[in-house]
Image (cartoon, rainbow, N blue to C red; front, side, top):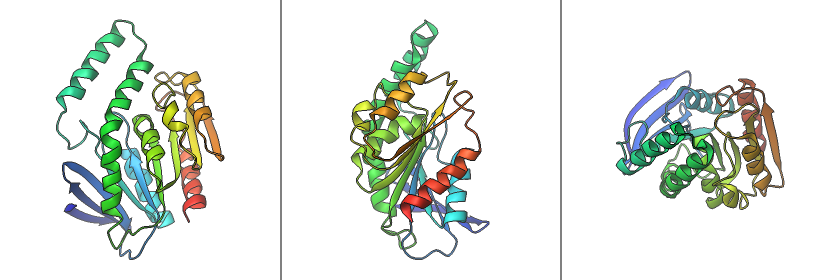
Length: 243
């Protein structure tokens, strides 16, 4: 892991880093020492490690809970180079949708493909970050919706260090099998009028989760219209399960 920059704002220390070819950002309390809970944040499609919603969550996790938070650019996003194969598939899928194909199965298939790369990458990031003295080997949580859910479900299913997860805006077409291996507490977000993920597929993914403790948060609105109060719920959820 190589740190490339460091800044501080309102008591939150931000360190940009690279791990091999993976660019990431780590947020911790300024002057932090010793182990603390760590939240891995999975950004949405077309976004990056410092997208506004990622920054907002990271800063609140750090400032209000004393957690550490980390996010990385997934392939083809942020500071990572364009992946020719992924770009080709995405272009073909867009053409198929414009010709009348249903988008949900195409999105699910594409996310399942990308997850084969991101799951081992994210596990390597956890390995590296938890070796730092100001993060340590405390409990781990995962937050990811939309693309962050499609990649996050197989990650949470494969990673025993994750003790709680917030997921949502994703469907069961590619994730149901992995969801059946998830047993940690889950908070799951559904937008009732989601134009990208069919409601029945979101509910099927929630149903597939094997967690004994799982809660469904369904709100009116389209894919991008998650109410601001859901961030407050996320903070309470992780504080309950990671502290």
